[in-house]
Amino acid sequence: MNGNLEMSTQRRNRTKEHLRVSLIELIKEKGYHSITVRDIVDHALYNRSTFYVHYQDKFELTEELMYIMLKGLEESVGRAFIPGRTVSTTNLSIESFSIISYIYDNRYFFELIKYDDTIPGLHNKFPNTILNIYQKQFIFETVNHIPVNMEYFERYTAYGFYGLIMNWIHTGFKQEKEDFINEVIALARTHMQSIKYVGHENNR
Image: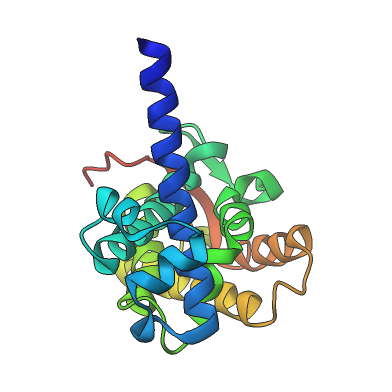
């Protein structure tokens, strides 16, 4: 019985993944607003009834896709850190930037930011997710402990990081991932002395 349930769950998840991938590919081909449910199921080689088992419309599919990807972005950050531990920026490594690895591994989705007719809200929610990570998951110490307005500092560094990511995406990830991360680390060391990972449950 459990085996049948597991197979059913796997089949359901696989179908939903196919539909999400089809939506991404169609956005790149023809733009988001012209896509219909018929387009999605034809591209994914399913029928409409299969689609409606999982989603009410393309908007529900879109909402789930963006939620999954941006939630994954938030969760990717802590893989290389121990909650409560402060790390000097001199000790940062390629592994420290699992967020960049996550973006690269899921570049088929994050490339959608390049398109004008893309998922509604993506151009705002992507940078806002990065800002949320900076504000809620980390505590920063400036170089030489220079006192600054930390809210401004977090926004400055978060949007600066987003700008670098955007350029990397727009150039088709031309720079090798490891080289890109090393450049980000070098820049971080110019204004950050240390970072403390506090995780998702930050009550600052």
